[in-house]
Amino acid sequence: MKRKSRFVLILFVLFFLLSQTFLRAEEERNKSNNFFKNVFDDEIAIWTSPVHMKAEHLLIWVPVVATTLILIANDENIYSEFQKFKDNNGWVRDVSPQITKLGDGWSSVIISGAFYLGGLAFKSDRAKKTAVLGFQVLIHTGIVVQVGKHLTGRSRPGFTDGVDHWYGPSGFFKRYEEGFAKYDAFPSGHTITVWGMATVVAEQYKDKPFIPILSYTLATLTGLSRVTERAHWFSDVFLGAVLGHTIAKFIIKRERLRNISINPYVSADGIKLSISYSF
Image (cartoon, rainbow, N blue to C red; front, side, top):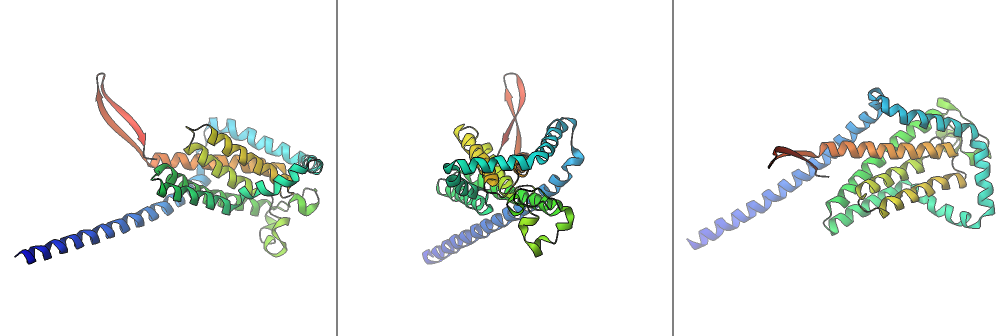
């Protein structure tokens, strides 16, 4: 009888462990499915957002568009001044090639990966969610910037020796035959990437003031380095920074709305609602 009971207990334990394993696998699969579904839904929302633009949004985007156009008109002179400054300051020539690497897409992957591993090691949900957001924003900024580059076909200043030239959509396919530098400037991919990542980190850790300051400082320096490295015009960098910041804020807001919880509770003044984010 004891042997039979022990056998039943072992079977029960094995069944429990297997069921937990399957449940954990199903949970991870659902998370993965949700991630890609959210990315798809958010990308649609980004491209349809102008349709839902409100009057207060125009107060932001009209100055952004106007500033971009003014910078484009003065880009050649601005670029020339940047190069003079670089030539006259050795520290710029030393620092610029290093700081510009922060805008590389792989840098954002490494940073997001580090946050995720750190979250696992130190059991920090905030760090893991920062990583997930970082990957999401990297995808969205990557898509937006490539659409912009393909449609505008602007030459990089280093390719044209500081002479601004736009090919427009005619360079859509030519860039794959004649080289990206001839059609790949507007907007700046490095800048939109680094500003997207900086905004995610700054928003997730805004309770620690030095982190947003450090994040945005590094993002700004990275953007400026794209001009000193002869890879972009200043207007490319300006618009890239605005887009990276805006897209990141947009994705963070949508993710928080997906994870919002409203809980009623009773107080001395009656029934009230508390709003919290599992994010």
